[in-house]
Length: 100
Image 1 (tube, rainbow, N blue to C red):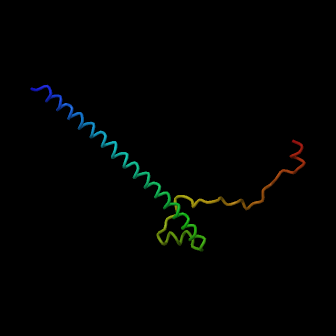
Image 2 (tube, rainbow, N blue to C red):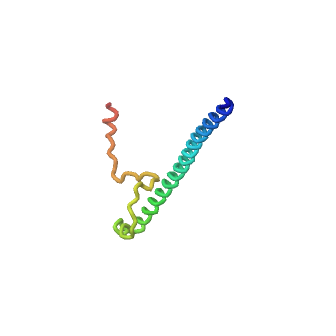
Image 3 (cartoon, rainbow, N blue to C red):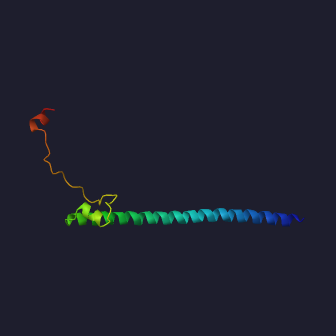
């Protein structure tokens, strides 16, 4: 056996193993990027669906009607600015506030 031949075979085996490991990480990284992009697309679609569902409710459809059409209640709220409270807020009288 030639020592150089043995060393070349060993180096080739190490190189192949290294390449396999690098390719595995590369594939996992590519899948991770695809997953993140898909999650962003899903979040945007869910947000749009929630807004459109709320618009249908404002157009005088009921949730029962929409369920009858095969539409599920959105999993997340449409977002936007929160509605203000419709009840009057109670404030402490000025004399009580100044005494403290």
